[in-house]
Length: 266
Image 1 (cartoon, rainbow, N blue to C red):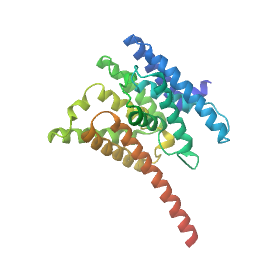
Image 2 (image 1 turned 135 degrees about the horizontal axis):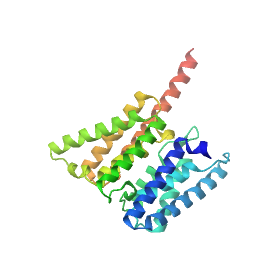
Image 3 (image 1 turned 60 degrees about the horizontal axis):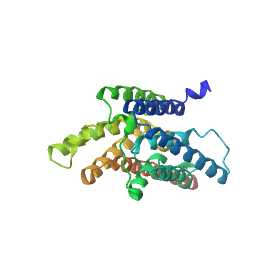
Image 4 (image 1 turned 90 degrees about the vertical axis):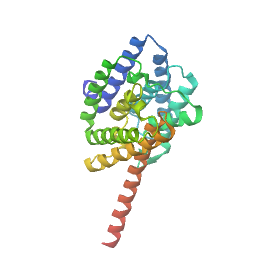
């Protein structure tokens, strides 16, 4: 158990639970805790059923637990229980239905959350990112984010994403495009940091090589900023990430195709 806690998923799970407790206690709102039980319960159950149908070897459902926690920390605490459950179900289903070489193409939590916006018009307060708490709580967010990013070696993605994203916001603000100034205030800035550290760094759906990480981060930021400038809201974060996931999937397919072609010619 001690060894597992030192793994990247162990770090993420501990951070998610800590954020959950801090935000719930400080805000004196336990509805988010209830939503977390629902989201995690549905995620774990769906993961078990999908794994059984796919005849995959049973393992501790840490990925499903993390997806459930992220969904609960992002959805508004006022979200109906069945919408929370549906969002978790969609997230885990995408993990098994949209795959390439037995690995998910899209970040499950991001996929489920974007689907919940489009299907249920859910409110996403990012309360678990301390958007409604005093500014000093961002220090906790940054410490947790640093630990996770360092553990999974994803600093190129985080730095390229945040650097590109904030630069584009400054340009958009200069030309009065969209409400770019709002993106630098709570809860938008909290959402961006949480997103960059805990969702953009997901190892199964993001590249490992530094060069590919830089491209992935820049692409996600550009797409996200464009969507924000046009539509506003908070779905731009998920759209940027999912486009980055799609780019990563396409890159893998092209690499495999090139290898096969080279093998045939040789």
